[in-house]
Length: 374
Image (cartoon, one colour):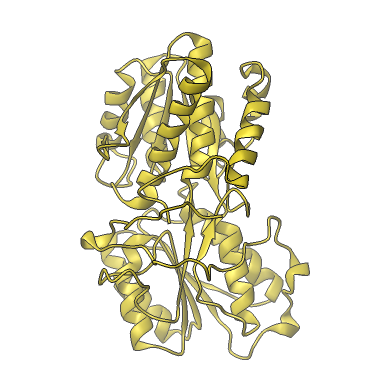
């Protein structure tokens, strides 16, 4: 399922990142990938060498880089091949890492994040016999609404759908506590970040509509597409100050969107001494980083690991398909995590309400409209 009326996505250097027709989207990844999907050393084409390039967040970001690595590692282990994984420490590493990957004989190169779009496109055009995939981006650097090379597979996620459920849950939690204020902030204002914030805001609106409530959202305005951003994805003083500026509004639930910046949100929460909770993104944060389990209400997840796994397995058997993969609630490419320690503390009826909302989104009875969705 994809969102109706998709709109042009702003991307690197202002380029639009939307493919006009998604009818040929790649098949959904398996919810629980295993060797039964066809992975096996006997199926691997001669010379197959999978490679992965992180963005500056690195492999230990507890988010999309780490999830991508987990997917690549799982596939490589089942295929009995050795991947080459390049960890970027800053933006200047992308092009050299890509050049090295090609010189090392990589036949499938997966790039993690929109920041690698330019390097991926350049490499793909110069090496049409190699296969590429990129996470959270359509690799449309020239703005013509098409992926710039036929050997690049976009792996993108309609995260607004799962974030809608997260926003509803956050609003319910805050209303139950009598606070009626929730917040969010992001790293860079790009589609793959803003799509979380859109869905979150719309989920809060849905809660207010259904319950006759007045839970207010701070840090993001859907209509104006303006909000609180750190300008990057580093867990630094700027990120902590941005988190604090939202917490200062009196919110008791906050959604930090942008990999490691959740650490800054957690630090600001700790310093405040309040009972504020946060939501994780990409991975199940309460599991990925147990140091923040006690302040993580729930996570809005993307099955990046599964998408990378399936892409790697397909390429290994000569069945690489460059059609975009779009993760949705329907194909389990996006979803909410468990509430873990907070399961027993949720407002009465909330789990059933979330289940009903998810079914309505999957059936098309509810359409989550985000300007930033693929």
